[in-house]
Length: 491
Ligand SMILES: [Zn+2]
Figure 1 (cartoon, rainbow, N blue to C red):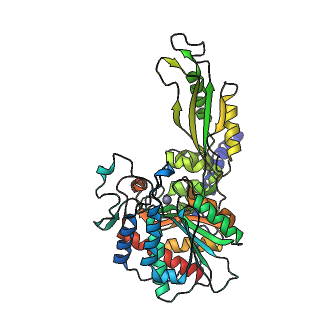
Figure 2: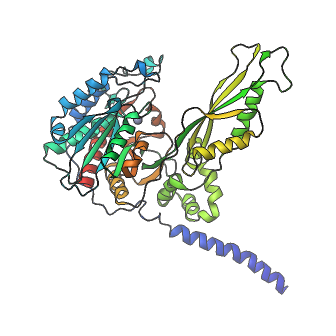
């Protein structure tokens, strides 16, 4: 009886102790130091001439600086028109800054600071846009290159990505220059001319700046935005990319004898071998891990989230599998936690009754921080085992970026300014696409990826999609953000 009683008491006590620990940790949870708190004093708002900004964004959209997959189709004279437009439209900014045109029509502006002992800051935007998919022109409410201002928005290709940032930067610098602001810290603008194809302009800019000895305090480029309805709390959240994923495409080739499909070989030929190889690779998914910038977002937002999320984050030691299961349940969430594997293209024989001599598949990977092109290749090789296929990179793969600090002064300045302009909590996260800023690593300590536009999750498809537009409220936020950031960081 005594022993049974003791066991019973033990059975009750252990869960009670556990519960107490979980609850105490939940109620005392604070995000890692610096992640959200900032004692930076953000500069006051600047005056914004929203009518002028809208007209200028409209004019920039009407200059079709479209980059094509086949570069021979690019109309390079349009970049010249855009450059002349910027010079004519922003005279005070052009008096304040020196200007260089480098590879791929890329612009570098330098606004020299008065204290050359301070590390410069680099602000980026790109001049080029993606084409409108042929056949979808009719689905646009307003023609994609007309720059129509209607219904409280500026409409057209590039309104958000990325002429909104380009014009936002120029409007802010024009206003600050006219008001006599002179930076203490040098401000460098890198305006890429070919971000949407390979970013050779940004690569050239990075080489040039590094050769000049530039080691910027930070780089700010496009990447993430202010989400109206973030999936964790349902409310507003300004998300700043502290890293971006790597990019690689694996080409898998199954060589076979070919021949007439009326007498196929025992293994059914190259296509069947290829299918086995693709399936083997896809079945061997990279494990999801609750770490890095993807996990940082949840850690930063947890205090604002409901009790279950807060409890799970505060007691990660106990609930890690649950957290991974929850975040990883949707494709965008899963993309934050691991390297993704996406088969995209297939090629067999040119005719239905011909066995192929080689069958080919392409698999696109987005490589999470922590993995490398080498770990991706060796995982694919071990997955296919001794299947008779060859694996090779389609083009040279890109590693994931370094992860930028969330405790540096640079982070505090950028996150505090994002918070002040958006009126929203701020969190770091991982950019699952690629930006020009990845090339800038040799010339900078920290790289942040953020555009101060407020978008619903469903609106993110406007970028590169149909009916891209920037609301005037968002345009105002852009100008405010860049202006206040320059004064806060460099004033
Ligand atoms: Zn872009």
